[in-house]
Amino acid sequence: MSPKWKQFFQKQTSSYDYRTTKYQIANGLDCSGYVGWCVYNILNTTNGKAGYVMLAQKMAKNFASRGWGSYTARGAVRNYRAGDIMSSTCQDCGHVWIVVGSCSDGSVVMLHASPPGVQLSGTPSRTGRANSEAVKLATYYMKKYFPAWYKKYPNCAKGSSYLSHYAQMRWDITGTKVMSDPDGYRNKSAKAILKDLLGD
Image 1 (cartoon, rainbow, N blue to C red):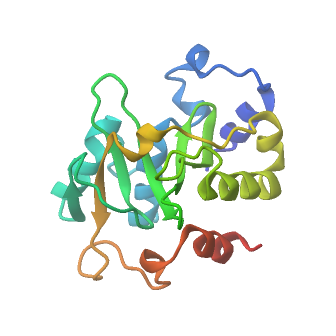
Image 2 (cartoon, rainbow, N blue to C red):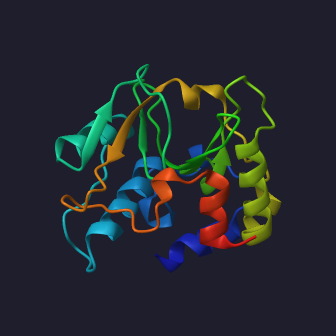
Image 3 (cartoon, rainbow, N blue to C red):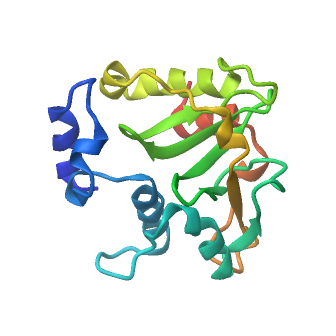
């Protein structure tokens, strides 16, 4: 990670407006930059190789076309599993995020870079309840483990479009491609995954 990212964050207040600092790539990551950075660090151990950053709405389909996993179009997505790459299909509202896991109420915990930056967030429940299990989990972990961030940006809730407007790339975890699942996260809930990664 670049030390400039932390320095930039420390300079910002709770009223930070990402629109005033667009395209200043040295200062942080947007959504596709974050997902591309994650994939790069999975596949590489040295700097300077070809990257995986592209338009957010192209990422799920592009990654699937590389043979890394299966692609499911918007409207055909039926469930969410750890590691799924979710790309919006709207040309004017591109966004991409990574699934941490789903909850019993149908809500989903995600990792993404959405203004003001990289964070855990939660979707509403399948019935539209805003204060869902996922939102409660994201809020708990952001507040406990990232208190400086949470103090500035306490909103960990995202809208229902996150469950309806995104195509999905699901990793092939057989070990014959680029990904495996030694911890069995594919079959665990968001709560169990976060507990394993971060603790109580």
